[in-house]
Image (tube, helix red, strand yellow):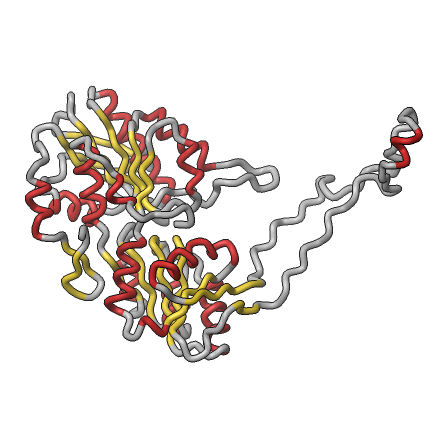
Length: 386
């Protein structure tokens, strides 16, 4: 297997992994990173038997980003490790400037390793907004990036925004292994989707673990702002049936006397659970945990319905604002996230947060890309629902 666990919440490479990493030619590969997650970059470089290239990223007094690369990158393969954090805008600018600096210094290829892609939740049109993920993809391609490595995109369709190859890695093997090895009596568990939108991911976990599935329905979403700008003004009333149409055609055509019909208002039902959680361990899964109010409300409902323990597993632990305090005071027993996003400060505020190291997966992806090997092993047994 690719993954082996040596203690709770940590993953180490198998013994053969070091010999695999030794196959990398260290003369034409350079790993650099910005300020978003230097610990992850150092861990990836250490697993590959390399050291980080000389790259300094800092901000001037006027908050402009300055990038200085001390080592030569001419003709080399550059891997820029830069994830998204709560300081997303600075993370993006650092990545773009680093990529452009390598491009103008004649690097052979520039691969952006972005475990958590910022703005990935803004991948759909909202009223008169825009699809920010598409804009970000065009900026990355223009800056000089030739390849993207990311993990658990909010929507897989985001890969179509890029004009360069995108490898969307999966953290599910790590989380599944954690469930099997670190949750006592996990066979008495049920996988929970906190809303119908996560049902596909939860179903994938349930099928792999041979467990039951429960879905929470009726979650109240954030209300969009109502603006008085004419969007709700009704059209004028007129007969919509063409008068010049043949009589036989008019007889088969249904017309309305109020113009364009109005969309019925959605009225969400109160929170309900579809599935049995009484006396069982509830495991909620998701790709991102940021604002935790929805998770806390779902956990309280699961507890009221008889769940004995409640776990939350997510790939990206952004944990913004007062999320650590809310989680510490909630009925959730444990929150498990990977280290795609730094959250050491949040762990000091909440003892329930556990971290799984996924640096070996990123290191293996870099090794395979650099050696022009197939990436299919990293996606083996992955279905469309993942």
